[in-house]
Length: 286
Ligand code: ADP
Image (cartoon, rainbow, N blue to C red):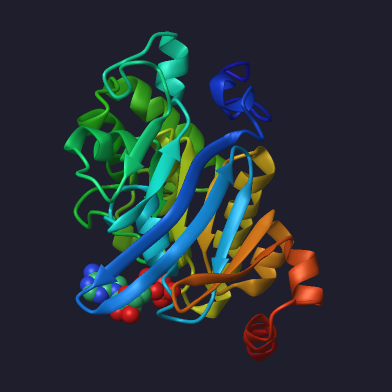
């Protein structure tokens, strides 16, 4: 061990590391309506490999809907999401079924989206939810290897080895055979993160991962997220933890009423917001 792809300082897959800084997802003009509630009104967003994007804004502003659109859980009504060729495509070096000519995957939501396109988009990312959603009657290890073994057809021994390494990295190796109810909320959420990492996604999506936790447990989860950011993972985070966004994000998007009111470097935005609405929001919470 030690020299493997999961060794310290070398956690990223080579195909991802080599493309650091290039766009992974490009989102243009996203619109979404639920009934007569027009919740996304033209969202543009670029997610670059190795960057952390934080989505902040009042409740109901559309943050979660944007996040869910990035992995096909929400289906916008208009706009496009373009995804760079996947790691798998690059590794094979040949065009494959998801993109027959080897060009980037483009979902144009004003047209019909095929199941294949939707799965191809989803395949690139893994989501960490507000509630960890662990299976209560399965051990930590069983929860973590479920996706790799059942969905990705990774051999059980390999999945177990990888899961154990990931659990070690978040300080939970000794909880491998425990059941979720035997863990604290913070430990459960760290397992939720490991479960996402075990899928070896190109993009990690976090939907308010600490908002269901008791205040004293928030720090340990944010610490793991900061480590992942430092390791170079590509992350999009919906969060109310403004200090975290300020310290860790490369770009912050402030959403209100389904539009990006302001975006940019968090230091600049938090110090001198350009929009009155941003200023009011930050003042209320900081
Ligand atoms: P945020 O994450 O900023 O709190 P959301 O994206 O969760 O905002 O929600 C934006 C708006 O869309 C809210 O008014 C919410 O009630 C509505 N909404 C979200 N999901 C659904 C859904 N599945 N069905 C109907 N309305 C929804």
